[in-house]
Structure formats: structure tokens, C-alpha cells
Amino acid sequence: MDYTLRMGHYLKTSGLELPIGKFLKIVLVVPLVMVPVGIIAYLVFGAIGLLVSIGVLVLSEILIHMTIISLSKKRAALAEDMLPDALRLISSNLRAGVIPERAFIESARPEFGPLSLQIKEAGKALMLGSELKFAFMKIPDKIDSELLRKTINLVSEGIARGANLASLLDGLADDIKSTMLLKQDIKAQVASYSMFIFLAIGIGAPILFASSLFLVETLIGMGTLLPSQALQTGSIHLAFSGINLTKEFLLYYQIILMCVSSFFGSILMGLISEGKEYAGLRYIPILVGLNMGIFYFVKFVVMANFAVF
Image (tube, rainbow, N blue to C red):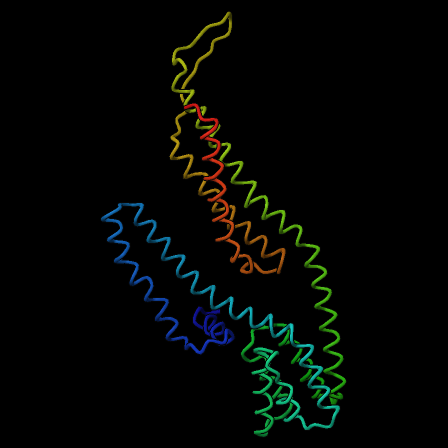
């Protein structure tokens, strides 16, 4: 799918009244602002300033896009939670003899959130003379929910085949509720896997990295004190040489490893918990921050208590 169409879809389903044209302007303004900032940072602070500017630019763009996508997903999740109750309420109004137009409008309760607005749109469409199955199709129009879309398709097919609408809505509501309960059970079972990954990457990894960094720095320090000439003990020849690694290289290398492991660990957590890669993107800043905090804390404690070189 084209980028413009994809982001236009997310903007439409996020509840923000923001045209795609204005969104694209906002997305383009950020790099236009950051380019001169990056040049100034490079002239003042050198390569570090340039890298920080590029990092801020990338994070800003990710934050903008993820905010839109997150809003869309939250509205979809809320609509899915309220869908069984909304279907039952519409069915109850129909069984009470209320005409479909009034049944839709009276079922648009505020507690249904974004689903309420779409049910009102369906009721208005019926009042304007639209067919019942086409009015139903307006409900998932601004909500990015596959469950809602499939449910409305089933309702439309049932209407086309002459099914009793009230009974159909009650049956769908029961099926959706059962499916949600099953998903909750499965989610509780797989939560332990996500917790294990989180603890291993967020806590265990920085502790091991900090400890290994101390060990390697100690070996580097010992290498500077050991004799460079070979020693002979009987028939055994021993030769000592320093380790050709710098402490700065090791530090940056481990930071990169922690960032990479945090990224892929977050993606894996998203796949396990929700079955979607992008669902784990929200864990990336948490894991990276936890890694950096624990790493530098352990490094400080170990170096303060055991450092020799």
C-alpha cells in the first residue's frame, strides 16, 4: 500500500480531524528544521553533535507516526470491547418494536466510545433512505478493526439472505464474547514468555554486559603491565602481549548490542503478545532506557568496588 494511502487510513481511523496534506507538511517540516540544527551541532560539537541530531530526527519521525497508529489501534480495541454490548442493545431495541432508524440512534450510548459515533452515522444513513445492509457498512468505516469489519460483513450477508436481524445480532454478540474470553486466556498464558524476554533483555543483559566490560578492561590493564618478551620455564615458552582493544570501542560496541537486542526483543514481544510486529515498538524506548540505566549503574558499582586499573 502506498505511504500516503496508508497514513491517510490511519489518520481517518485515529479520530483526528487532520487531512493527509497537513500531516505530510508536518512530517516534512521536522527534517527541514533539523537539517540546519544538525549542521550547527556538527560545527560546534563535531560528529557526536551530528549523530545526536540525526537520532533526534529519526525519533521525532517515529514518534509522530507511532502516535497516529497508536490512536487508531486504541480506538479499534475500544470498539471491539464494546461491540457485543452494542449489538445486544440494537437487538433489544429491535425486539421491542423500535424501527431500525431509532434502534440505531438510541443504541449509540456514550460509553461505547468511537463505536457510538459510527452507530449514529448508520442511523442517520437509514433516516436518509439508505438500505439496512449499507447502513451497517458505515459502522467500520472510521474504525480500523478487522473483527468489526468481519462482523458487519456477516450481518450484511444475513440481511441479504433474509435472516432475523435481532437473532443474528444476539448470536454474533455471544460468539464475539466467547472469542474475546478465549483470547484473554491465551494472552494470560503467553504473558510469561513476554515477561521472560523482558527480564532477560531489560535486566539480565545489561548486568552481563557491564560485568564483561569490567573483566575485559581489567585484562587490558593487565596487558600493559605484563612483560612483552617471552619467558621460558623448562620446555614451555610463554609470551605476553597487550590486547589491541580500547575501552571506548568496547563501551560503544556493547551499547550498540544492547540497542539492537532491545529492538528485536521488543518486536518479538509484540509478536508473542498480539501477533503483530509493530505492537512491540512501544517497548523499544522502555527496554533501551532500562538497559542504559542498569548498565551504567552496575558499571559504576563494579568499578567503584573492584577496579584495579
